[in-house]
Length: 246
Ligand code: ADE
Image (cartoon, rainbow, N blue to C red; front, top):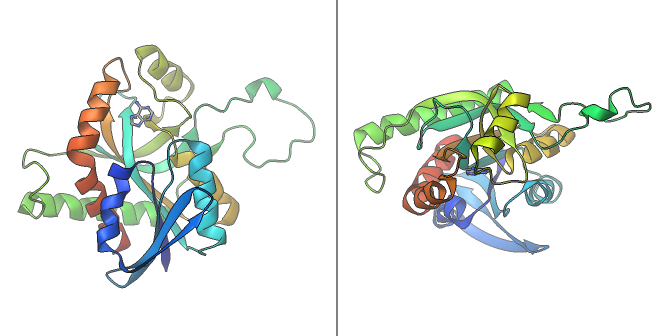
């Protein structure tokens, strides 16, 4: 089983490079792909950059060139629902492109895309289970004090549910409301997950998406996101990625 691991930002992924054995790097377009093994599991890791196009082209290269069997994306998200707090972990069971809206074309003839109306993708149950097991193990290790570089006060709640994806950093109550009015099931929002899920659905490749809440997608989102990014996410995402592989 070969796993493609994608992150949108250096902080979310590049620490993992030091764990890759027999590291090889290759460039496609402007992206560097790092392949090798972690604990004897074949991996290819790539920094996608932000947004749906960047994520989709990265996922396509991982599938077509590297022939990965599964895709894993770990990173940050802004909460949409009020009960989610900064640091909480969300495992996707559904990924929705909240910024695609074709409802005005309802009834349009010759519609061919199977994803025409919703741009919403269910996560395969095996991938969801794998993600849940990895997160459970992460929390157990955290309690045991296995991660000295993660704050000992870090005590996240874990949610499984719908994650929204759009090409916008959401940073206003109004922006949040627009998403939750249309998709009340969305727990948090980010900029890549549902794009990877669409590519995965095209090729029948399972996708795992795990997000850590860095901000509340409101007027304070910029500062909260920046603080969380630099203080916490590298270690959390690396540990989660390694646990998903196992
Ligand atoms: N990723 C982390 N926080 C986000 C936000 N508020 N909007 C979009 N993507 C994000």
